[in-house]
Length: 92
Image 1: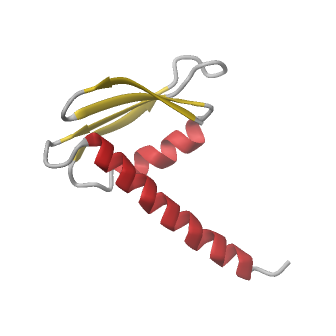
Image 2: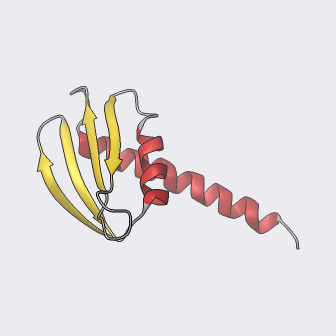
C-alpha cells in the first residue's frame, strides 16, 4: 500500500491509496463514519481494473482529517485483532 496526499486543508484530506481495492476502502470508509466529527467519508475508483482509489475525509473542524483517519485505522486494527483471536478458537 502506498499513500499519496492529493489535497489537504484544515478540514479536508484527499489521498490516493495505491495497491488497495473496494474491500479495504469500504472497510475504512465505514469506520470513518463512526467518528462524530467526520462530515464526509467517501472514496472513488475511476476505472474498476486500473484505477487507484481516492479517499476523501472531511471533518467539522474539531478534529483534523489526519487524526480522524489515524483513529479509524487504530479502531480497525483492534477489531481485526479481536477477530483473529476468535478465529483461532475455531477448531476444524
